[in-house]
Image (cartoon, rainbow, N blue to C red):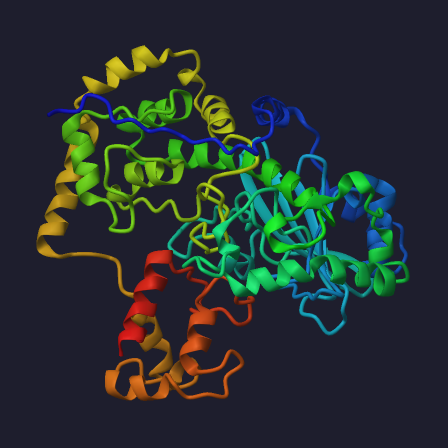
Length: 497
């Protein structure tokens, strides 16, 4: 039996917002005002008064009070700015999320003396990261995208800086007050293999700890007191299965997810436009967004399926956008790992997939493709289908032949995660503690040694390569984010020793 069309059904969450919401917002984003950070810094410095982080926040509130109306509080931060329940990291958010400015509140926390800034330029469709420091009473803006930011905000394999936000897809945001959206999820089911006891314990503590933060810290703190107090309408809702109060602080975790998804779809569309396989696959991608179908001739579809990574579903019916995008690009060795915003979690916490948000992903994705490649707009699905099923994909034939040859000769750029462990922990030149990763017999004996923060050495390793490790704990330490498959492969290897 031959397949003329390979169906892709995108399942939309019952909890989605109105589909027009994202579409309209993305359609207007190119004309929305963007906060002029450089002008603000020049204006503050020109006053000739000695500035501190606290006085700068006051200046910012006077200039842009809306930043202090819609914000997210992170009691566990995986960024350079660390935090806690009582001294959360604050993400000040512009109305359209094109600018986010962050700070924390405990002098003992890392990054206490600096502001971190993420900006999105609608014209270039790129995100830019900066740090603001305070030297001799003046605001000093760092270079764009310093390496310490890039260590987290893009795939370590990317050669040219093109960072993205680090923000989990709908509907769970670890470490944020109001970390759970409406609904249920097996991460919180103790009998589920996906059960996450750390996230469950944190989520159950949020209401109590948030109230303590308000009562004991927020009102008198020189930074937190600038925030607009949450109104009843600002409060989100927890999963009923957690037996916690229905009202939870800060619904803006959901709002920022929707807004950042809209911006990031523009970035994804540009990255797609810049790929070497665009000529053959431009309309394949557009049909994915517009028609929610994957139109490929049998021969081409089977080539993709035969070269897909083992952790992806190999079937003629794919259920998620993430799998469809990976199915198209990954066989050509085009990594899509940092196209989405999930923070090295492999979308473990996603309700559907790693590109998902409160609103349907295909609506802003289609609009973004049309904005970046306007020649696509207006084409009918029936016409796209007919064209693609008769397309010979000649432009990428040589590339496919080269990939087939590399597969046949065993050439590959990939290496197992254990190789990274060996390269750092079995050589004193890197300054990492010695662990005999290159000696299975010795390694099996030391993995059970206790006295580490998480228990045994093995438990410490699992934590540090996992989704809850903070920035200064995370492994590998070179900024590389292992994939879910790489992490599971390492865990299976160590468990079998």
